[in-house]
Length: 351
Image 1 (cartoon, helix red, strand yellow):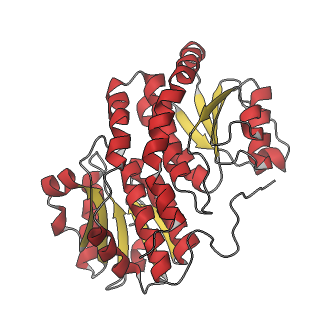
Image 2 (cartoon, helix red, strand yellow):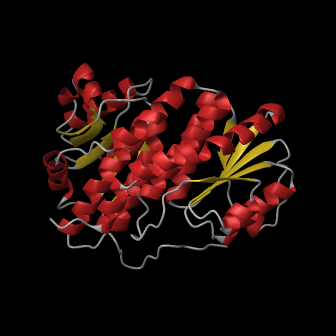
């Protein structure tokens, strides 16, 4: 099968993160020093599409590691309803590939004028969003030609994790981040990915399930199913799935799970067991050592074996890279071009 641009760019994430970790260290030293003095009481994230999924990832890390309540901005509150939010005691974090969407930029400008501490995580460091923020953290992904964001999304997650590691002075997370580029270079075997492609080859809808740090990855996977392979997909937390969506289980229908080894593991496996008992096809992506330790073959019909776990916070980043490779090939096998999906453009601007 001919490699797509989407696959090539996905594989470029490791190099982007390696550069990013070096580039951003001095920037994060200054930002962390300011935040230690100012001690923000809450955080507000701004993003759209894949970048909003990265914002959800930021929410989980900021709340669990820094213990800062974090909420997602509704840009229309500022852009359409012209509300001046009280953000003087907030950390405002905007994430964008292009940094051009007017609504994201307007919320950032409004936050800065309200004396919030503002941080833009962007690929384009000369973009309007970067100029609107006090601090700019480049994700160093370089040019991305495929419409579907891959290495820029992966690099955004790494930048968020790096920021939180520095802010909280977490040596554990910092050391794990240093291992991330080399871990991303270990690509799952084609046979493992191809067996998953077979599961989704002839379906028109599916559900993607995870929890905690894995949930933003599930959101992103559901988007990419729609965007590239034209499969209607929806992401659920494994905790929410029993509240209504459980009625959607059908025999022989695939359900995709992202697994990481933390406090969310047992509950997610319990749900997988229930789905499998009702005849659903359970597809899992999980680190090799976690598969062996927890005997995941009992819970899954198919497994994508990921590299050994480096940290539960970072393992979802490795998982989404493997998913991108799979869904790009799935799109081609279904007759679609994942590099240029119908009706979509690389930069989407909303007001």
